Length: 139
Image (cartoon, rainbow, N blue to C red; front, side, top):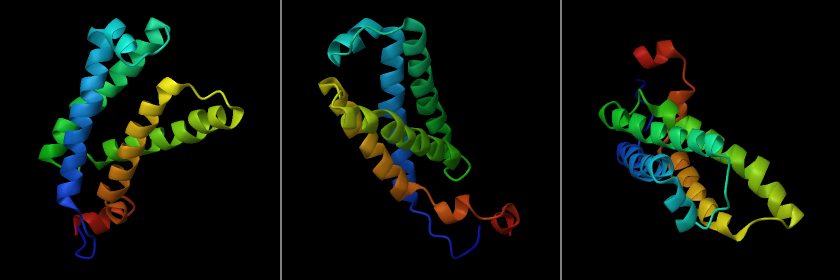
């Protein structure tokens, strides 16, 4: 890794733990006790297949984050992907609902949680490392 790239190791590891606990726990709950999760978060009934896919995705992010604790830079793409899909959700889902005046009250918690991940990922991800050429990273 080039000497001029600063890595915030503490933040990076914190985001892996946060993803394991938050996304992993949330996803596990969505798969194992979906009715409890819907009731707890006041969510309307949803298609069980789509709900299960979402839960599986969250659980996968959580489980892969365990590997990020061992090799933080190798698994940075997990955090980048998490950052991207949450930003896309804000722009493509939350913002249009908000503008249309149809934003459901139960989604406020979702917004707060997603915003905390976005902020944490922006701080933790070493973007100069992510966007450097592979040869530079190996030298």
